[in-house]
Length: 218
Image (tube, rainbow, N blue to C red; front, side, top):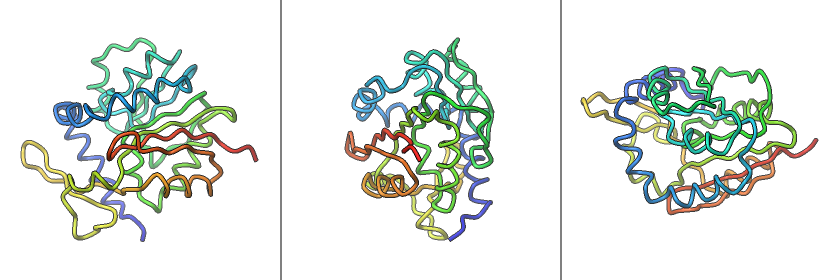
């Protein structure tokens, strides 16, 4: 099934509108899983020239900044970038970029993204990973954090597209439809192997996975 352009647009509108209140809900949500995820992040793979995708309010950017020489952080929302800029990270360059319409202009030593892949529908999954492959150096690494099906319990089902969409409501009562595709570590490993990646995908905390992937030389 092809995901509608309207759903993708609604997702971007949601995150633009949520930017100012994002951390009030996301930071407490991550509290229990953060230690395990940060242990993997700090394992030594992320260094040098790093690209972060869907950087949001900079929750993970702060940690990447301390590990990397330089960070290029991309996000589709100018409002999210404005929030992230408050961290004052001297070695980070923020850029506004729609990741569904993205052609990398160079390569980085490492690529990182968190809580983004579940917002990529199946019909755009392969194209997204093709872009990631173009962005990472041949001997580089890609790492990402995401959620498993365990977290579906927290979402409001969207009956019009139940396999790909959920509903989210902001503090002011506005409701938006967004993409939310829950994939297991086993499914991700299988799909990414087929696309030419060697990956270790592990559930590091109930409901949260961490993956380390490297491109397989062709």
